[in-house]
Length: 74
Image (cartoon, rainbow, N blue to C red):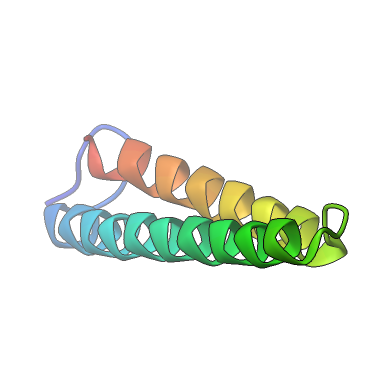
């Protein structure tokens, strides 16, 4: 059976599971970015390029999770 948006109930559940995993990955990326910033601050360095890239990655993962949550009906 499919929902109004053309995705089956089973696929909705799978999308919700993947979205949850992506949210967890987003949190891990945020933790990593904070670690990079902390190390730079302790060394008296400027904001590292890695922080910007990690932030971009986190935002992308969060966007993907949001799309999947919409498909899942969450």
